[in-house]
Image (tube, rainbow, N blue to C red; front, side):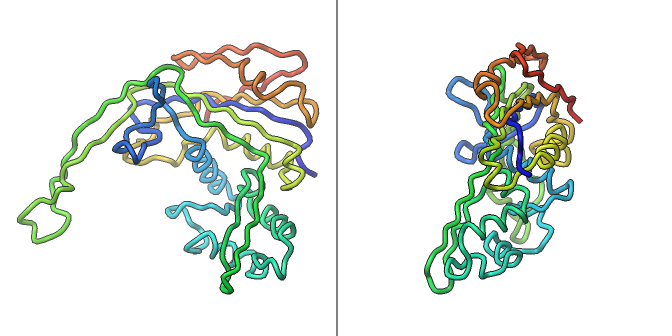
Length: 276
């Protein structure tokens, strides 16, 4: 049975001396908007969500290269290897049947959706769009962020005979000194009916959100430099929901120190879940 009640949620998390989401078009500096508020894209947050789901044993279609568990070199290879080549052949399998099979197979497909767009050996293309019920907004900092940039050097030569240092011996690292970010999301029962996303799936997602940054350490994000402080979870009493997501999200006000206030709406009591 698919998701029975509309769900809204918010994630409050802190960043200290880390680069939460570098911008490759700006020297990998932490992303900011024109007003100086820190930004973390929805794509970045979904990547971390997929990784935590994969750590929890869920089957994931869009696996990162460093976390592959099945050995498939590409998304097409994974789709054909798991579903079978006939599933991506519109002449042999109806697109709606292929979409249903993909949703049953991979958690992230039935949650976030996916576009299966591949060309066959006969050069005729197949496009199977799946619209997922779970949406996650980009995260923004509560106040403008302070960014520190540090020049770094490498003390060894990466190639050659070692007599000369290459141009790659100099570089820059950037970090957000300290900030609190908020990301919002929602789950639509109407779209869940089409993908098979269930109440049990929603509970799995609820359980991994407090651990969003565990196991995500890197040079840019040292262990412990990013932490989920609180997850706010609103479960409505119907598929349509008592209130719009916009109205629900506006009931949360977050302060620069991570504390927050909630304005309660009639008949809708949020669950407040501590970070891991």
